[in-house]
Image (cartoon, rainbow, N blue to C red; front, side):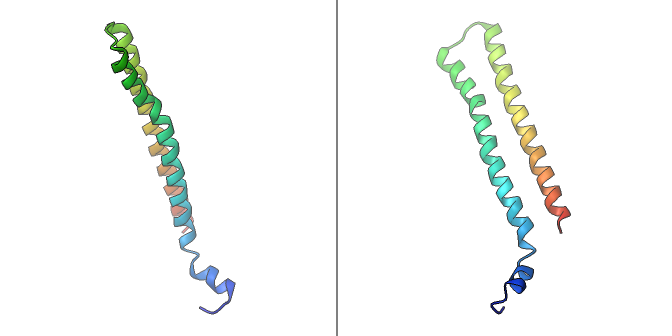
Length: 90
């Protein structure tokens, strides 16, 4: 490897899609964590308030699980689509 930038670009061209996927996966994980916090917060809120009314408890649980399920489903979809786009670049 001489000091030729074009040769260096060709040498590490295979690493660009992998690095791009890693960055997208990292950012996606951060966004997943930000969205998951309210779902966990609903659980702690329900425990803290000691909600005894079954209807309200069901509503809070439903909202918690719906938010968490949606978050996980979108995160997995995001990772699959990003992996597919990365694989097509090879």
